[in-house]
Image (cartoon, rainbow, N blue to C red):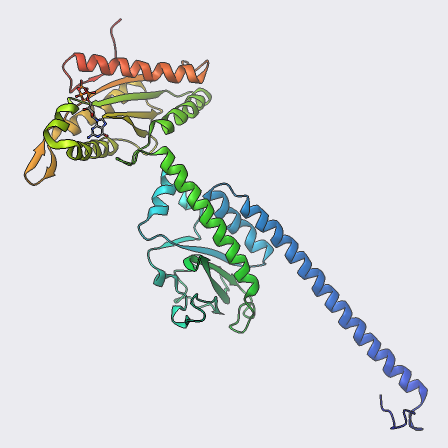
Length: 389
Ligand SMILES: Nc1nc2c(ncn2[C@@H]2O[C@H](COP(=O)(O)OP(=O)(O)OP(=O)(O)O)[C@@H](O)[C@H]2O)c(=O)[nH]1
Protein backbone atom coordinates (compact mmCIF):
# COMPACT_ATOMS: atom_id res chain seq x y z
CA UNK A 1 0.00 0.00 0.00
CA UNK A 2 1.39 3.43 -0.93
CA UNK A 3 1.35 6.30 1.57
CA UNK A 4 2.29 9.96 1.15
CA UNK A 5 4.68 11.67 3.53
CA UNK A 6 1.70 13.08 5.44
CA UNK A 7 0.22 9.63 5.86
CA UNK A 8 -2.78 10.43 3.69
CA UNK A 9 -3.79 8.28 0.78
CA UNK A 10 -3.07 9.86 -2.61
CA UNK A 11 -6.25 11.02 -4.25
CA UNK A 12 -5.94 8.57 -7.16
CA UNK A 13 -6.10 5.49 -4.87
CA UNK A 14 -9.53 4.93 -3.55
CA UNK A 15 -10.51 3.24 -0.34
CA UNK A 16 -11.71 0.07 -2.07
CA UNK A 17 -8.18 -0.67 -3.34
CA UNK A 18 -6.69 -0.14 0.12
CA UNK A 19 -9.22 -2.50 1.67
CA UNK A 20 -8.45 -5.05 -1.04
CA UNK A 21 -4.71 -4.86 -0.28
CA UNK A 22 -5.35 -5.24 3.42
CA UNK A 23 -7.53 -8.29 2.88
CA UNK A 24 -4.84 -9.88 0.69
CA UNK A 25 -2.20 -9.17 3.28
CA UNK A 26 -4.46 -10.59 5.92
CA UNK A 27 -5.03 -13.75 3.91
CA UNK A 28 -1.31 -14.19 3.37
CA UNK A 29 -0.66 -13.74 7.07
CA UNK A 30 -3.39 -16.25 7.94
CA UNK A 31 -1.96 -18.76 5.49
CA UNK A 32 1.47 -18.25 7.00
CA UNK A 33 0.02 -18.68 10.49
CA UNK A 34 -1.76 -21.86 9.43
CA UNK A 35 1.47 -23.17 7.93
CA UNK A 36 3.46 -22.37 11.08
CA UNK A 37 0.77 -23.95 13.23
CA UNK A 38 0.81 -27.04 11.09
CA UNK A 39 4.60 -27.17 11.34
CA UNK A 40 4.42 -26.73 15.12
CA UNK A 41 1.86 -29.51 15.39
CA UNK A 42 3.94 -31.74 13.17
CA UNK A 43 7.07 -31.03 15.21
CA UNK A 44 5.16 -31.65 18.40
CA UNK A 45 3.91 -34.95 17.05
CA UNK A 46 7.46 -35.93 16.00
CA UNK A 47 8.76 -34.97 19.44
CA UNK A 48 6.05 -36.99 21.16
CA UNK A 49 6.79 -40.03 19.02
CA UNK A 50 10.51 -39.66 19.66
CA UNK A 51 9.97 -39.32 23.38
CA UNK A 52 7.96 -42.56 23.31
CA UNK A 53 10.78 -44.15 21.29
CA UNK A 54 13.40 -42.91 23.79
CA UNK A 55 11.41 -44.42 26.64
CA UNK A 56 11.07 -47.69 24.78
CA UNK A 57 14.79 -48.04 24.06
CA UNK A 58 15.80 -46.93 27.54
CA UNK A 59 13.54 -49.69 28.89
CA UNK A 60 14.96 -52.41 26.61
CA UNK A 61 16.27 -55.15 28.86
CA UNK A 62 18.51 -56.98 26.43
CA UNK A 63 20.41 -56.57 23.20
CA UNK A 64 17.87 -58.13 20.78
CA UNK A 65 15.07 -56.08 22.31
CA UNK A 66 17.06 -52.85 21.89
CA UNK A 67 18.24 -53.33 18.31
CA UNK A 68 14.87 -54.83 17.38
CA UNK A 69 13.12 -51.66 18.63
CA UNK A 70 15.55 -49.39 16.79
CA UNK A 71 15.03 -51.19 13.47
CA UNK A 72 11.27 -51.52 13.89
CA UNK A 73 10.28 -48.13 15.33
CA UNK A 74 12.83 -45.60 14.07
CA UNK A 75 11.99 -45.89 10.34
CA UNK A 76 8.32 -45.31 11.17
CA UNK A 77 8.60 -42.35 13.52
CA UNK A 78 11.33 -40.64 11.52
CA UNK A 79 9.80 -41.48 8.14
CA UNK A 80 12.98 -43.15 6.94
CA UNK A 81 13.40 -45.73 4.22
CA UNK A 82 16.40 -47.40 5.76
CA UNK A 83 17.99 -47.61 9.21
CA UNK A 84 21.15 -49.60 9.84
CA UNK A 85 23.48 -49.82 12.79
CA UNK A 86 27.23 -50.39 12.65
CA UNK A 87 29.07 -51.45 15.79
CA UNK A 88 32.81 -51.63 16.34
CA UNK A 89 33.59 -55.08 17.71
CA UNK A 90 37.36 -55.33 17.63
CA UNK A 91 37.93 -58.87 18.89
CA UNK A 92 34.42 -60.12 18.13
CA UNK A 93 33.70 -60.00 21.88
CA UNK A 94 30.19 -58.63 21.42
CA UNK A 95 29.31 -61.25 18.81
CA UNK A 96 30.78 -64.09 20.88
CA UNK A 97 28.86 -63.12 23.99
CA UNK A 98 25.61 -62.53 22.12
CA UNK A 99 25.89 -65.89 20.38
CA UNK A 100 26.47 -67.56 23.73
CA UNK A 101 23.33 -65.84 24.96
CA UNK A 102 21.42 -67.24 21.96
CA UNK A 103 21.05 -64.00 19.99
CA UNK A 104 20.08 -64.88 16.41
CA UNK A 105 21.97 -62.41 14.21
CA UNK A 106 20.01 -63.46 11.12
CA UNK A 107 17.06 -61.66 12.73
CA UNK A 108 18.96 -58.37 12.31
CA UNK A 109 20.22 -58.10 8.72
CA UNK A 110 20.85 -54.36 9.18
CA UNK A 111 23.13 -54.83 12.16
CA UNK A 112 26.72 -54.59 10.94
CA UNK A 113 29.90 -55.33 12.84
CA UNK A 114 33.27 -53.89 11.90
CA UNK A 115 36.66 -54.48 13.44
CA UNK A 116 38.08 -50.95 13.23
CA UNK A 117 37.05 -47.31 13.39
CA UNK A 118 38.16 -46.71 9.81
CA UNK A 119 35.64 -49.21 8.49
CA UNK A 120 32.75 -47.05 9.72
CA UNK A 121 33.10 -44.82 6.67
CA UNK A 122 32.87 -41.63 8.75
CA UNK A 123 34.84 -38.57 7.77
CA UNK A 124 37.50 -38.88 10.45
CA UNK A 125 39.85 -36.49 8.67
CA UNK A 126 37.55 -33.57 9.49
CA UNK A 127 38.23 -33.91 13.21
CA UNK A 128 40.05 -30.96 14.76
CA UNK A 129 41.52 -30.14 18.15
CA UNK A 130 38.43 -28.04 18.93
CA UNK A 131 36.02 -30.63 17.60
CA UNK A 132 37.76 -33.95 18.24
CA UNK A 133 34.70 -36.07 17.63
CA UNK A 134 33.54 -36.59 14.06
CA UNK A 135 30.36 -34.93 12.89
CA UNK A 136 27.52 -36.74 11.15
CA UNK A 137 28.15 -37.29 7.47
CA UNK A 138 25.21 -36.25 5.29
CA UNK A 139 24.86 -36.47 1.54
CA UNK A 140 23.75 -38.35 -1.52
CA UNK A 141 23.56 -42.12 -1.43
CA UNK A 142 26.26 -43.82 -3.45
CA UNK A 143 25.60 -47.49 -4.10
CA UNK A 144 29.27 -48.42 -4.16
CA UNK A 145 30.56 -46.21 -1.39
CA UNK A 146 27.70 -47.11 0.98
CA UNK A 147 27.48 -50.80 0.11
CA UNK A 148 28.83 -51.81 3.50
CA UNK A 149 26.75 -49.35 5.51
CA UNK A 150 23.48 -50.08 3.73
CA UNK A 151 23.78 -53.75 2.77
CA UNK A 152 20.05 -54.07 2.07
CA UNK A 153 19.45 -50.60 0.61
CA UNK A 154 15.87 -50.21 -0.66
CA UNK A 155 15.34 -49.32 -4.31
CA UNK A 156 15.36 -45.55 -4.77
CA UNK A 157 17.49 -44.66 -1.77
CA UNK A 158 18.70 -41.11 -2.38
CA UNK A 159 20.22 -39.44 0.65
CA UNK A 160 21.90 -40.76 3.76
CA UNK A 161 23.18 -39.66 7.15
CA UNK A 162 25.84 -41.54 9.04
CA UNK A 163 25.81 -40.43 12.65
CA UNK A 164 28.66 -41.41 15.00
CA UNK A 165 27.62 -43.21 18.18
CA UNK A 166 29.73 -41.68 20.92
CA UNK A 167 30.31 -42.75 24.50
CA UNK A 168 32.64 -40.56 26.55
CA UNK A 169 34.17 -39.22 23.35
CA UNK A 170 34.84 -42.78 22.17
CA UNK A 171 33.18 -43.89 18.94
CA UNK A 172 31.38 -47.19 19.41
CA UNK A 173 29.72 -47.30 16.00
CA UNK A 174 27.38 -45.37 13.76
CA UNK A 175 23.66 -44.97 13.27
CA UNK A 176 22.93 -44.86 9.56
CA UNK A 177 19.78 -43.27 8.20
CA UNK A 178 18.59 -43.40 4.62
CA UNK A 179 15.80 -41.69 2.70
CA UNK A 180 14.37 -41.88 -0.81
CA UNK A 181 13.96 -38.10 -0.63
CA UNK A 182 17.14 -36.52 -2.10
CA UNK A 183 16.64 -33.37 -0.01
CA UNK A 184 16.25 -35.19 3.29
CA UNK A 185 19.94 -35.38 4.20
CA UNK A 186 22.02 -32.63 2.62
CA UNK A 187 25.40 -31.44 3.93
CA UNK A 188 23.91 -28.08 4.95
CA UNK A 189 21.19 -29.59 7.13
CA UNK A 190 21.33 -28.98 10.91
CA UNK A 191 22.27 -32.15 12.75
CA UNK A 192 21.36 -31.37 16.38
CA UNK A 193 18.30 -33.56 16.34
CA UNK A 194 19.91 -36.67 14.85
CA UNK A 195 22.98 -36.23 17.05
CA UNK A 196 20.74 -36.10 20.11
CA UNK A 197 18.95 -39.23 18.95
CA UNK A 198 22.26 -41.00 18.33
CA UNK A 199 23.54 -40.05 21.77
CA UNK A 200 20.54 -41.70 23.45
CA UNK A 201 20.92 -44.78 21.27
CA UNK A 202 24.65 -44.93 22.13
CA UNK A 203 23.95 -44.83 25.88
CA UNK A 204 21.32 -47.54 25.56
CA UNK A 205 23.60 -49.72 23.45
CA UNK A 206 26.47 -49.40 25.88
CA UNK A 207 24.22 -50.22 28.84
CA UNK A 208 22.63 -53.20 27.25
CA UNK A 209 25.97 -54.59 25.96
CA UNK A 210 27.54 -54.21 29.44
CA UNK A 211 24.56 -55.95 31.00
CA UNK A 212 24.74 -58.80 28.52
CA UNK A 213 28.49 -59.13 29.19
CA UNK A 214 27.82 -59.31 32.94
CA UNK A 215 25.10 -61.86 32.36
CA UNK A 216 27.53 -63.88 30.28
CA UNK A 217 30.30 -63.65 32.88
CA UNK A 218 27.85 -64.82 35.55
CA UNK A 219 26.93 -67.87 33.50
CA UNK A 220 30.30 -69.00 32.21
CA UNK A 221 33.43 -70.54 33.58
CA UNK A 222 36.30 -68.13 33.17
CA UNK A 223 38.95 -70.84 32.80
CA UNK A 224 37.43 -72.86 29.96
CA UNK A 225 34.83 -70.46 28.51
CA UNK A 226 32.07 -73.08 28.76
CA UNK A 227 28.96 -72.54 30.88
CA UNK A 228 29.04 -72.84 34.66
CA UNK A 229 26.84 -74.67 37.14
CA UNK A 230 24.48 -71.74 37.60
CA UNK A 231 23.69 -71.77 33.88
CA UNK A 232 23.05 -75.52 33.75
CA UNK A 233 20.87 -75.47 36.87
CA UNK A 234 18.68 -72.82 35.27
CA UNK A 235 18.73 -74.29 31.76
CA UNK A 236 17.89 -77.77 33.03
CA UNK A 237 14.68 -76.50 34.62
CA UNK A 238 13.68 -74.76 31.38
CA UNK A 239 14.52 -77.83 29.32
CA UNK A 240 12.58 -80.17 31.61
CA UNK A 241 9.50 -77.96 31.17
CA UNK A 242 10.00 -77.87 27.39
CA UNK A 243 10.63 -81.63 27.16
CA UNK A 244 7.38 -82.17 29.03
CA UNK A 245 5.44 -79.89 26.67
CA UNK A 246 7.00 -81.12 23.47
CA UNK A 247 7.35 -84.74 24.52
CA UNK A 248 10.98 -85.51 23.78
CA UNK A 249 13.71 -87.09 25.91
CA UNK A 250 16.67 -85.18 27.34
CA UNK A 251 19.90 -86.73 28.53
CA UNK A 252 22.56 -85.67 30.98
CA UNK A 253 26.24 -86.62 31.10
CA UNK A 254 28.57 -86.33 34.04
CA UNK A 255 32.20 -86.30 32.87
CA UNK A 256 35.24 -86.46 35.15
CA UNK A 257 38.91 -86.41 34.18
CA UNK A 258 40.65 -89.52 35.53
CA UNK A 259 43.42 -89.10 38.08
CA UNK A 260 43.51 -85.38 37.57
CA UNK A 261 45.37 -84.95 40.82
CA UNK A 262 48.24 -86.83 39.18
CA UNK A 263 48.04 -84.54 36.16
CA UNK A 264 48.43 -81.53 38.42
CA UNK A 265 51.25 -83.21 40.31
CA UNK A 266 53.05 -83.97 37.04
CA UNK A 267 52.59 -80.77 35.05
CA UNK A 268 51.77 -78.24 37.76
CA UNK A 269 48.56 -76.32 38.31
CA UNK A 270 49.06 -74.16 35.20
CA UNK A 271 49.53 -77.26 33.06
CA UNK A 272 46.44 -78.76 34.72
CA UNK A 273 44.46 -75.67 33.71
CA UNK A 274 45.62 -76.10 30.12
CA UNK A 275 44.46 -79.74 30.22
CA UNK A 276 41.03 -78.59 31.48
CA UNK A 277 40.75 -76.17 28.55
CA UNK A 278 41.74 -78.81 26.01
CA UNK A 279 39.35 -81.42 27.43
CA UNK A 280 36.53 -78.83 27.34
CA UNK A 281 37.35 -78.10 23.70
CA UNK A 282 37.36 -81.78 22.78
CA UNK A 283 34.02 -82.39 24.48
CA UNK A 284 32.52 -79.37 22.77
CA UNK A 285 33.70 -80.58 19.42
CA UNK A 286 31.50 -83.65 19.72
CA UNK A 287 28.30 -81.75 20.56
CA UNK A 288 25.47 -80.15 18.64
CA UNK A 289 24.82 -76.44 19.10
CA UNK A 290 21.59 -77.23 20.97
CA UNK A 291 23.53 -79.19 23.62
CA UNK A 292 24.96 -77.34 26.60
CA UNK A 293 28.37 -78.01 28.11
CA UNK A 294 29.31 -76.75 31.56
CA UNK A 295 32.14 -77.10 34.00
CA UNK A 296 30.69 -78.08 37.33
CA UNK A 297 33.87 -77.21 39.18
CA UNK A 298 37.28 -78.86 39.54
CA UNK A 299 37.80 -81.47 36.83
CA UNK A 300 34.10 -82.22 36.35
CA UNK A 301 32.07 -81.33 33.27
CA UNK A 302 28.42 -81.96 32.48
CA UNK A 303 26.53 -82.00 29.19
CA UNK A 304 22.83 -81.50 28.68
CA UNK A 305 21.58 -83.08 25.45
CA UNK A 306 18.27 -81.94 24.07
CA UNK A 307 15.99 -84.40 22.29
CA UNK A 308 18.44 -87.26 22.87
CA UNK A 309 17.49 -90.69 24.22
CA UNK A 310 19.82 -92.82 26.31
CA UNK A 311 21.16 -94.70 23.32
CA UNK A 312 22.16 -91.63 21.33
CA UNK A 313 23.52 -89.86 24.42
CA UNK A 314 25.67 -92.91 25.24
CA UNK A 315 26.89 -92.87 21.66
CA UNK A 316 27.96 -89.20 21.97
CA UNK A 317 29.56 -89.95 25.35
CA UNK A 318 31.59 -92.74 23.79
CA UNK A 319 32.74 -90.36 21.06
CA UNK A 320 33.84 -87.85 23.73
CA UNK A 321 35.71 -90.56 25.68
CA UNK A 322 37.47 -91.70 22.51
CA UNK A 323 38.35 -88.15 21.46
CA UNK A 324 39.97 -87.34 24.83
CA UNK A 325 41.84 -90.63 25.04
CA UNK A 326 42.62 -90.75 21.32
CA UNK A 327 45.53 -88.32 21.20
CA UNK A 328 47.97 -86.83 23.64
CA UNK A 329 47.48 -83.31 24.90
CA UNK A 330 50.39 -81.08 23.97
CA UNK A 331 51.34 -78.54 26.62
CA UNK A 332 54.62 -77.58 24.96
CA UNK A 333 56.78 -79.11 22.23
CA UNK A 334 58.55 -81.14 24.92
CA UNK A 335 55.57 -81.87 27.12
CA UNK A 336 52.70 -84.09 26.05
CA UNK A 337 50.47 -86.23 28.18
CA UNK A 338 47.66 -88.74 27.90
CA UNK A 339 44.41 -88.00 29.66
CA UNK A 340 41.23 -90.06 29.95
CA UNK A 341 37.72 -89.33 31.16
CA UNK A 342 35.00 -91.40 32.81
CA UNK A 343 31.39 -90.62 31.95
CA UNK A 344 28.01 -91.42 33.48
CA UNK A 345 24.94 -90.91 31.28
CA UNK A 346 21.33 -90.67 32.44
CA UNK A 347 18.20 -89.97 30.44
CA UNK A 348 14.86 -88.39 31.18
CA UNK A 349 12.62 -90.43 28.93
CA UNK A 350 9.36 -89.08 27.52
CA UNK A 351 6.72 -89.26 30.25
CA UNK A 352 9.30 -89.08 33.06
CA UNK A 353 9.29 -85.29 33.20
CA UNK A 354 6.07 -85.06 35.26
CA UNK A 355 6.26 -83.59 38.77
CA UNK A 356 8.38 -80.93 40.42
CA UNK A 357 11.09 -79.86 37.90
CA UNK A 358 13.55 -79.17 40.74
CA UNK A 359 13.20 -82.73 42.01
CA UNK A 360 13.39 -84.17 38.50
CA UNK A 361 16.54 -82.15 37.74
CA UNK A 362 18.21 -83.22 40.98
CA UNK A 363 17.38 -86.89 40.32
CA UNK A 364 18.73 -86.70 36.79
CA UNK A 365 22.04 -85.17 37.95
CA UNK A 366 22.32 -87.69 40.79
CA UNK A 367 21.69 -90.64 38.48
CA UNK A 368 24.39 -89.47 36.06
CA UNK A 369 26.76 -88.86 38.99
CA UNK A 370 26.06 -92.38 40.33
CA UNK A 371 26.82 -93.88 36.93
CA UNK A 372 30.04 -91.86 36.74
CA UNK A 373 31.01 -93.37 40.10
CA UNK A 374 30.38 -96.82 38.60
CA UNK A 375 32.60 -95.94 35.63
CA UNK A 376 35.39 -94.95 38.02
CA UNK A 377 34.90 -98.13 40.05
CA UNK A 378 35.02 -100.23 36.90
CA UNK A 379 38.43 -99.06 35.80
CA UNK A 380 37.95 -95.46 34.46
CA UNK A 381 38.25 -94.37 30.78
CA UNK A 382 34.75 -95.69 30.17
CA UNK A 383 31.11 -94.70 29.67
CA UNK A 384 28.34 -96.18 31.79
CA UNK A 385 24.77 -95.36 30.88
CA UNK A 386 22.88 -98.18 32.44
CA UNK A 387 22.95 -99.81 35.82
CA UNK A 388 21.71 -103.39 36.14
CA UNK A 389 19.43 -103.27 39.25
N1 LIG B 1 44.67 -77.31 37.54
C1 LIG B 1 43.52 -77.30 38.20
N2 LIG B 1 43.26 -78.28 39.06
C2 LIG B 1 42.10 -78.28 39.71
C3 LIG B 1 41.14 -77.27 39.51
N3 LIG B 1 40.07 -77.54 40.31
C4 LIG B 1 40.36 -78.67 40.98
N4 LIG B 1 41.57 -79.15 40.62
C5 LIG B 1 42.29 -80.33 41.08
O1 LIG B 1 41.62 -81.53 40.61
C6 LIG B 1 42.03 -82.62 41.43
C7 LIG B 1 40.85 -83.54 41.64
O2 LIG B 1 41.32 -84.66 42.27
P1 LIG B 1 40.39 -85.79 42.83
O3 LIG B 1 39.01 -85.27 43.08
O4 LIG B 1 41.10 -86.41 44.02
O5 LIG B 1 40.24 -86.84 41.73
P2 LIG B 1 41.22 -87.42 40.61
O6 LIG B 1 42.67 -87.27 41.00
O7 LIG B 1 40.81 -86.84 39.31
O8 LIG B 1 40.87 -88.96 40.66
P3 LIG B 1 39.59 -89.69 40.06
O9 LIG B 1 38.53 -88.67 39.83
O10 LIG B 1 39.22 -90.67 41.12
O11 LIG B 1 40.02 -90.32 38.81
C8 LIG B 1 42.58 -82.02 42.72
O12 LIG B 1 43.96 -82.22 42.76
C9 LIG B 1 42.28 -80.52 42.58
O13 LIG B 1 43.29 -79.71 43.16
C10 LIG B 1 41.45 -76.22 38.61
O14 LIG B 1 40.67 -75.29 38.34
N5 LIG B 1 42.65 -76.28 37.96
